[in-house]
Amino acid sequence: MLRKPQWLRIRYTDSPNRKMVENLLKSLGLNTVCVEANCPNYCECFSRKTATFMIMGTNCTRNCRFCNVRYADPQLPDPQEPEKIAKAIKTLELKYAVITSVTRDDLPDGGAGHFKKVISEVRQASPETAIEVLIPDLGGKIDSLKLITDAAPTVISHNLETVKSLYSCVRPDAEYTRSLKLLENIKLLNEKIYSKSGIMVGLGETTKQVYELFEDLLKVGCDFLTIGQYLAPSKEHIPVKEYIEPAQFEEFAATAKQMGFGFIASAPFVRSSYNAAEAIDELVLR
Image (cartoon, rainbow, N blue to C red; front, top):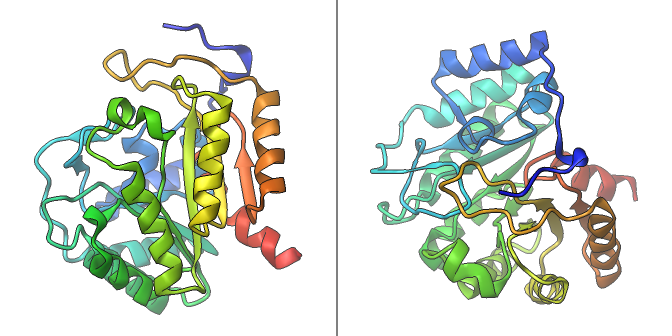
């Protein structure tokens, strides 16, 4: 295993806010991708009284080799979960909420109907809160995606995760073109919704392949892009091939901006939902 460079070392700190968020989530029986995916920004986000909610259980129907979320038989969706999510968002007084899920290939609509219910409940409880949903590919079903676009969240995000040539190794149950088509369909179904995607680097991709991915995303109208360093959750996961220098992340950002993305976040610890509100804030300030 490669030795982590100095810029990838985090000093964890505790805070009363972190404990408060943890206790709130526990009392409502809610899950977060922050915990389940072992996110390096977990302590920082909880300390700022924010979290990325993960709906429809903690067991995923896909076994991506980069992901720390458990691959196992899925749990039944909690019918009270939309109301609980809304309560948590109102309690935390979130101006911007991010909601994601495990992949649910076992459900006919891929879980789109549950997303719609969550969006509706949040809107009723906190009408001023901007909502971002980070969704799976829904099996490529446009009718399922339409359930979500009809609910009109502020942002719909779907991560490509890596370059096309690495899909068979990194995301064997996913399809690069299917994910691109989903992002394209967001705009076709509701042009007012911002679309977003994210990738990891350090998996063996080339710079040329990364820029080709940028072009593919722009062709389907993707507005926002995030780029972060891949960190292997364990020795059982696909190993890190390279730790990308911070200067390269800055170059990715400059190139992506020049190519036409409305917002770009690119740094070693960037994750798709980390400081997600910055994209909307930047657009408002223009």
